[in-house]
Length: 349
Image (tube, rainbow, N blue to C red; front, side, top):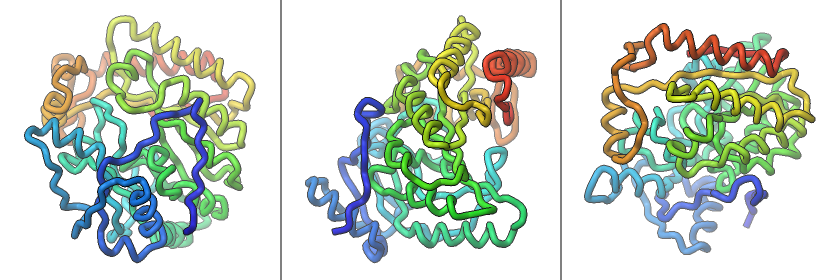
């Protein structure tokens, strides 16, 4: 049996996801990764079932909250049939989807809202076909550089110890003169990426926030210290590094706590190059539907979902009113510039 390379650093992230039940599309077993996963889970004694489609799975549970949390323990191994590359602004030119959903249970997650009850994890086994679609797009646009976002539908690092797909993707982009890969994560299981000949063509960005927000609203994810240590190791391995600070929330003492957050970033990266460091700043946002889902999934959550002081910003999303948004943006841009004068704030939204 071919073994998927898996190296873990317990001091970085001990929360490696392992499903309690796994479903396979029949066609997934025609691919090497599908067969490897079937054998891996069988050896672990995890219940395996077949499903006609990764898009049509009924998760059992008496209440919506029960079904949500049960789905977050479920994995579907399938084949991605639609290989059309969709735009992914402002993060990148196109989405590169190799997984769907994430084992993290962040109260505010926009993916959890858009997926509805289909928040179960999905690994797509036809990775070579997915990468071939990216290759065709790169060739059609050269000599213009084309960027791809690997995290628009999932946190691929969270499932990497099972699939090995992200390592293969980074290796692929290491060979692309006109292609670049972007990855976002809240996890720290990054050791299998440290020895890749990536050629600087993959940028890792860690989604970070204040300890208060991580502790209260980002369940089943790595701690801030683990994420920053992962960023340091990747930076030492020559990867371009960035940080997404999201969701930006206004609450008592938010200025002090975001200042402490940026101090922690600076202290952790003190001994490594920070010339290419990037920041993406994203305000908290929600829709009426997502607010309802959050309250059903996390009935005791203290996440502020009040529409007071909010305005609409397309697709029914509520964001902070302009004066508050401007205060957030100006404060964070100034604090980042003070600590990282060579850093780049790519956007605030």
